[in-house]
Image 1 (cartoon, helix red, strand yellow):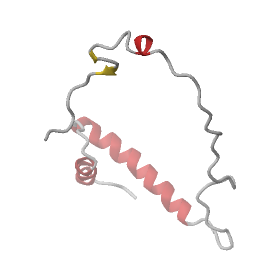
Image 2 (cartoon, rainbow, N blue to C red):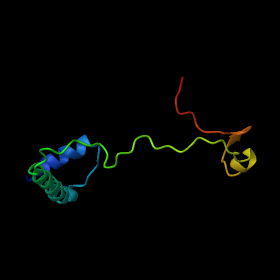
Image 3 (cartoon, rainbow, N blue to C red):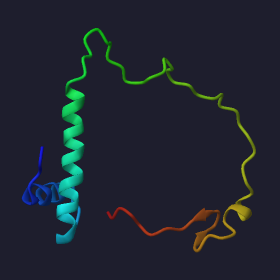
Image 4 (spheres, rainbow, N blue to C red):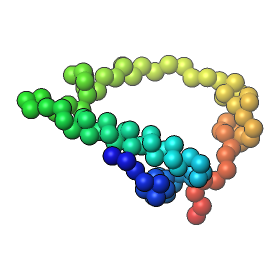
Length: 96
């Protein structure tokens, strides 16, 4: 499958990517190769192969939750550009 330069620009806009005009031809070739590979994958016979979401039969492998001593607040905040009491001070992210 060969993508046109306009299709590449459209894909870039959808992905919110700013690409230069000289990159369009290169990306057209690369994306076309990727799409060709997907076409090849469509030809693979998967009859009788159960669908899988993970290659290993592992589920929720967690370590035990064991309390451990934390760092001293002074050591933790030693290189903080701004602090307030025992907390990092950061710019407001959400406004009221």
